[in-house]
Image 1 (spheres, helix red, strand yellow):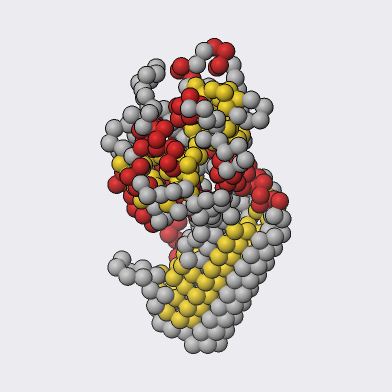
Image 2 (image 1 turned 180 degrees about the horizontal axis):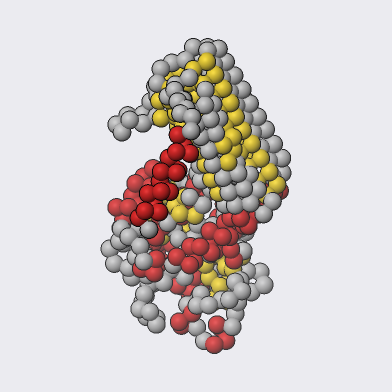
Length: 452
């Protein structure tokens, strides 16, 4: 239980010019999910009373996501600093009597446990005026510095531009994230000035203003990876890499074998059961759930698919949204499955496209088979019954049903339903003309010689 209700203010008003993108910075994805969505999803687990996102340029891109997450947006028309940004949320919290957690939309890896520690420290026995999150990166760069005592009580906070050489030598850096009580926070924010090297209203200044009033603040520390922010495409790639690294470790800890971990890429919601084996260069898009003892062979791409226990996928398979692969089914090399269901033990081992289809248990789909599901205007469904056998290089023109136990001869173009246990042949008659090939070659060779 939280000591008191809390509201979250997420700062997302920056222009993100270094991203060189028409897409709002906080909408750039990590593991297939917008950075802001990552953050708001973690917040939901803590049960905030309010979620307020401060937006600026490009706000129309962000508002839909915020609304879908049950939040609200406020606008910072001019970017005058982080303290000014937080003040834009004050009218929304005028009647709110609780804590405020200040986060950043471009810092998506912060975990719920760290947020919880911020709030718990705020209500510790010494009741600090504010709690900030510090971290110790390998290279402190131009982060603001925190000078703190051994018990975490803050002596001073200073922006890098305003720090002395001695203060810059301190390796405890300010993440910018802060927790405070709503009433105290906004009172302090109204006192923040812009007499600094950048001429901005800095959020961390509330700590020193509280100190001037005889109130101390405290710092808690988090891991550097958790505080990683994104201001450029290069930083986006680094944060993605860190997310993937941690997700791979979790998968292996949960009983999944990754043959070459660094080559496997997960989505934010990938679910994989125990004793699965994932071979090199497998990519998971969003919406994948995999049962137990499944083997995903190399160079497969899987998105929006459900795979049951003991199935085998790949190599070089592509499962698209709506694919449902049944228990012990097999989808082999260069097979694409879209919005199709394969029953228990069904096989499509080579060079096949199955779209908008139902394939019954134990059915065998020969190499080069395609379901012709689209006429340029509408999609149609193909049904293949249990135990049916589709010969290689067949085209099943939907809508069409192949009955249970039926056999379709290789090279057939099937346009009508096939009854159960029937054999269907739909191909041109083979005609043979003895000696014709030899006479053709002789005639063409003579013609070529005359031309020379």
